[in-house]
Image (cartoon, helix red, strand yellow):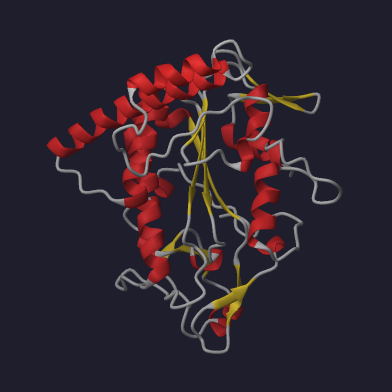
Length: 329
């Protein structure tokens, strides 16, 4: 299955494939958010092959216990062969039980470079790994160019590689909301500077999106304070993204760092469990903030590659895996 067919299958009705191109049905309300976990997460401890004795032999200290209703540290049963990390019990697991989450373990690219950065580029570009790469053609920019009436945005400090291309894509970090560094007077001066040039539309659009997002985030923060929301980190950012995509944008990208667990990864508890807990609460918060539009939304969570089954010599953490082993789950 290629990338376009996968997107088509995930989005189901709203997207159709014709003549090798991806098109959206007119008037579609579909939304797509791509969440990139940078650093290569340990996929085998997220979706756990609980019937694999090789898994348990290979991970004497890192393995997640087989499902057991009375053990809070045991995997959550997905079916007879697979389990879910217990840190996702109150966030992703309920969505799975509702039929709103699917896991795709051991799927990946043919990029065997063993490089974090090279493989991240491979996924974001969506191009063949052989031959010359066009770093000005990210797959989400190409996707936006094929959709009817897209409103794309990157929820990042800088435009990610996946949004490089012919279309001008705005970006805005939602991790922290501060007063804009450029005030109204300075905005006017900058716009006058670029007036009449080819960059004028992009400058105007950039400031317009900044003001729109800042206004929405200020309102969200005020509402959150009244309701005593204590979310932090990605959870708070994901809720903000949801409030924006619900009304304003239909194609988004956000990345989350910190998945390179070389030391003290842990099993049911520890560093990885903490990161998964935050990710799960963020995704569940995103779904909640989307309201009814959640049912017309696809979220794809991906990382550049996974980890080997075997622990390394000090039994602290798994070694790096050749990227073709596990790119997403």
